[in-house]
Length: 463
Image (cartoon, rainbow, N blue to C red; front, top):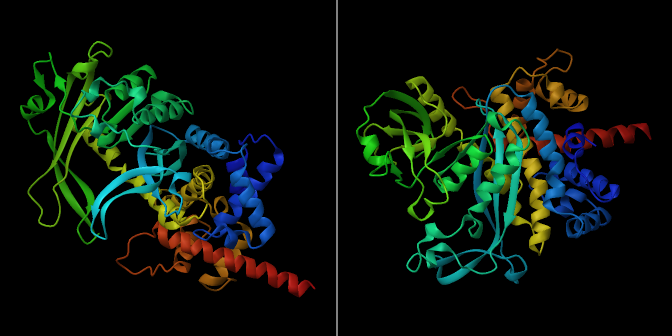
């Protein structure tokens, strides 16, 4: 079993040690065949049948599968220095099934171009929390929550009948944001954590919970709340604030090319009040508002406009720029979800029930994190030792593929990850950016196949 696999399963507490052994073998095989089906990864009927039984075992669930990874994430968070960014986001897995009721529903689509009429999407929803350093190095998942909708009773149907702000948070799906915040802050000193979310995380109960848990948040808002003494709003107060300076951030244009965009920054600390229906239950909070707006109107995309809200102090332009850069890291959790869907191909799985699919996706979460970690290690810590990522045999194979095996090669992770990326189709041209997740997971699969061929050749020679 690979060293990294042993580290990720060490903290698992299965009711039977044989289940832990089976989980380790499954994780290793699925990692060696990223994106392949269970039969392809397991290679024979006995191992495939054991995998199906593992995912269908009533004593196995996603919390047990991910417990070891959470423990490993905890140790990596403790070893990291400085603040920790906890990225939160929700994604959806859609499946085609003859009996969708065995899995569940996610939403209803009305009058789609390729399928007119109304139909229900079969699938699962997952809310995940990913810990990274301010430089972008992913340390691991801190919380994951799966759910599905047996029937639709969303707030959109209630908007014309009741004031949705008066509905307790415990009765909404939004409670997942609070639950993941609680679980994440238990892994490390909560004062080091900054919880980052998009406009869906603009939940007043989340702000109050962060204060109770002695942790911090930085979210993009979509609600213009009452501010000051309660007679005005955040937007009105921010209009009176002068532009404090400008800052450049890197974004992608319509052709997915990186470009530099200049943002104008305003910031102000003010008293923010809870929704009218909850003003008796929750107190007003002293928060900092940051507005970052792009100059001009680009032709091929919408201009950037971020309205950020945080409980962290912002006393000068440098501090405001730091918070904007932290929020700009939020896209990394979307990249993690892309690795899950495009790399691990979670939505291609043919398992028939929600419980089995949830267990399989939980295993994919660990693999997707490692692929993403390899991608970012190459960018944030390229001089790290190659021994921390590759085995001696893999290093020897990569030395053989990259040139003269007798010539000593640089013993850093960047050199060998570049060799893996080339196996996955990376061209390393002058103007190419650093290797991405896609070429790395393809390269890792090819490296595994070459490694297997080397081991078979050794056995044949020995016989």
